[in-house]
Length: 299
Ligand code: AMP
Ligand code: ZN
Ligand code: FE
Ligand code: FE
Image (cartoon, rainbow, N blue to C red; front, side, top):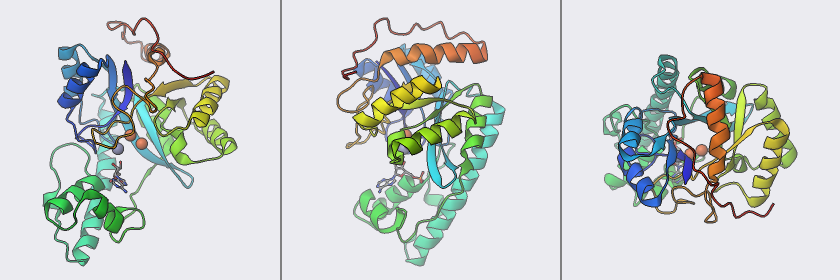
């Protein structure tokens, strides 16, 4: 099994990279990417853990960016996680996040809710609204994280602050410059009509898009088939993942992409070929799974 979209505690997931590897081991996931939001803080530890446990780890990330009025998630897969340029780009994203966290906390203080920047987790991971929600629960300000979002943190919540986002072209350029491939994540969540989705993909193609996340729990069956056609027509790679956050209520467990469907393992070979071609690196040490995993989709 493979899974190319996973979140850890270094962003808004609830399992550490080591715990993710343990679950992957139990479930038979042989190749994975931890794609935390806006941070590579799971690396290089995740690669080391993978080597220890015989799981191939493709360094990855999920960056939120904007294209015109749309907020878009871009996955970067197969990144050189040690790239200084990538680290620099990501640290400016983290600065924008901290700026926004300060804004949210100031608004909460306006409601006499005493959350401080010192309450936020320290370390090099990403901090955002889920962490603020957790603190509010711990301090007894709300009963649970859902209530924190519903009252304060969601888009029209009382303490919401918009975050400064990178243009999608810049996010993709960062990924490509670090040797990775840029993938449009879960297009189904954009809720665009097919023609608009095709137009978006065409736009992004001109800016360095390498693929589309076809297999994802938030893509409907109809969208999935449309995206497969789109990939074929535009010569884009298809990828897939669970978007696992380690929480109850996740739409799919590790290695699956909704409806008990496995992330098709045959997606890996074109991805690796592309990475080898663009980077001239040796990814051959770990062979892709021999037989493609069953994909219980009707053609
Ligand atoms: P941020 O990156 O700080 O804007 O936070 C976004 C994250 O907050 C998402 O990835 C989810 O994990 C979480 N989130 C967003 N909306 C909600 C909600 N209504 N209830 C619970 N968690 C949410
Ligand atoms: Zn997330
Ligand atoms: Fe996403
Ligand atoms: Fe995600």
